[in-house]
Length: 209
Image (cartoon, helix red, strand yellow):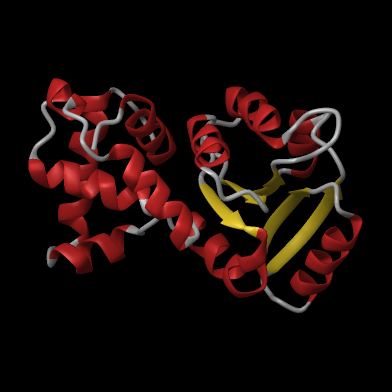
């Protein structure tokens, strides 16, 4: 199956580099690339991508603003943020806005294709440094007790926030993938959310882990 990718990136050279990379990396297809997110929802409606790649620092409107807009109409669409920033403010703002993954541009050539595959499988890919920041933002908070999360559910939620897929979490915890799915179903019910993006966003906003 062809995986349709839509790119929002103001750097012309990087847009062309990504276009060339995907041209030789089947089954990915870069269906379009735009320099800003002014008409983000219209572009998504027109191109119907499977995954969106979005820069944060763009003219007119930044990527976080564009992400917030598209999330109103496309809450389940995987969106990976591409950026040079590796500070807590941009990382957490992007994830709170509903980013499915967060990849530093210096890792694009080595991590991009694996990140796209991972997000399509339900994971939340992040650069190692970004994952550490997210975990650090969780630490030391008792808020999860308000939702009645069990220790194992907290562990699964923390692992989800690191961008691990269901298979990776299952292997780490030495349980079956079906067991992980069951834990995640209970987490969603307790947090009153309907997707991994919403769960991770809520965990960050409320420091649940």
